[in-house]
Length: 235
Image (tube, rainbow, N blue to C red; front, side):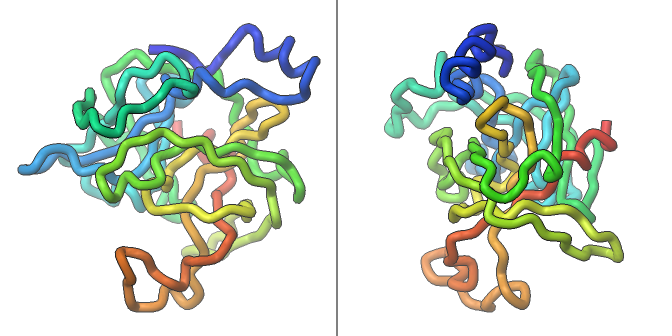
């Protein structure tokens, strides 16, 4: 498997103040569950900086580790054309290693050799206006597996109360879909991991109706990412 580290990044950074994320295609996976009809895609997961460990949002996996897999198509670069007509995928079994439902985070463990040297930061590293990039599978809930980069900027930093604990969140100026839950959010200036996408804000917990599989209360141009700092306490 590849690694998020690219020896040319530092030269590129000095010249352009921007990171080339082309190698991220080897480190971000669709997360799915094996069932009678094959693999049902659930969301996004990504490799951490320790062998065999991956991260996602806990609401994607729930508490049931049965049949969970990391699914991917071999891409040499994020810039490759992804054939939507090719429905074949490769997958590896994965188990739940640690859950943090208060921060909506999960660490998974798989017997596969994928490791990144990603530097885990957090919301403190991303003040309002910071340019960030997220990587995930926007239509995974409809079975479409296309790794997609989505650029945004930080619109706000907020504290959200859950289970008596206040957690740091980043408000991204972009709209997301369910398949992107668990996506890594990187600071574009240096590739530091600042957040994990957990979903759109839904007033009152949601509208109670669904139109074409979409809750109308989530149709706004902001998305929440929980601070990545909480991952470092889980492994």
